[in-house]
Image (cartoon, rainbow, N blue to C red; front, side, top):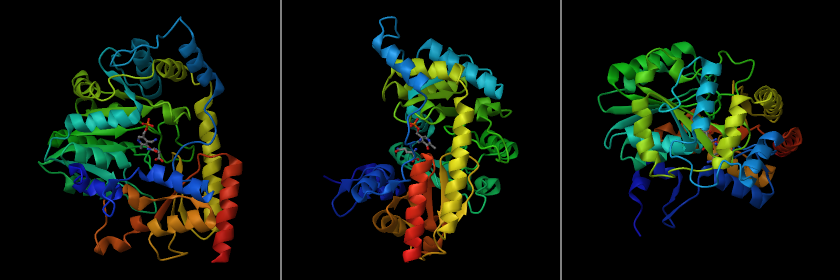
Length: 410
Ligand code: PMP
Ligand code: GLN
């Protein structure tokens, strides 16, 4: 069988094995498999190693088990009306954005489906799609599936701010979309008002659609420079932007795959057109529990943020003591660390060594970028590792003592 056409794109480089001619699992699954194989502490794939709130899980369990409903049959393609109302109410309460739940909110099977449907809806074949780099891996794959080309603007250490002037320089009449992820995976950057306003101005001037992936919206730490704001709260954004959220991150239930998309009726309608031929619909009981949680999180968002911040601080300290140059994240699940004080080898190789010899799995940031050219081999993005801190304190302590022991042995 020949190589699948989209694998020939830049995005394919991270998941296609030319020797065996097979498509590989994502970097997240590969890293989890490597961690399991070596008995390593898994700070690679970003998922909490404890369950989300018991009351939320109880609501889903009751919803599956009771004849009072919601029914376990197909929900509407857009999601249940009360789910859409809960999302609209959440956006109003947190961001002051008014949305009509009838046609401005759509349920999706995780943020992943909302991302896929948005890109397939708006990225014209042959056009260019802009994203900040590193980027969530599905962006590159889906842009390629859409027959478009991904172009990137790097976020640079130490503060990983978006370079809006570079974005302005990269935009052209071929650009169909700008993909923004704020708070950002893996850097933790939270886009400021000024950065957002310029991105929206550019998008309006060039008639391109902005997709804003906001799955880490409730994981912004109290020392972040700015609070998170949804793109739809930026003046003029409603004509050009869609925003995406996820219960997986907001409630520590990453396997639930309850996502949502908001925007103008016209843009939501276009995305729905694709979404109805992907999953069509899913998870009635999870929609029920997520809707209840969005209406009243019972203090979970604040507790979770505080816990994650402690994890971030401890992991930063542990990585620094082990000899890495670690960067503070304003939000999210991850600390980035440069390994060059320890070794000149690229992070992709260091990650293999860490899993095998230190017993700690991490993700090389080069898996979340376009493949680097030869000249770019020295690029700092090739030397960064991503460590997840969304883990219990004892898991982090175990990882830190292993990393420090490894560092001492070198
Ligand atoms: N976007 C980003 C930036 C992510 O990190 C993730 C993974 N959590 C997703 C989207 C996917 O979210 P979901 O699990 O809801 O599909
Ligand atoms: N979002 C998670 C991460 O960035 C993992 C998602 C996945 O496994 N596809 O680690």
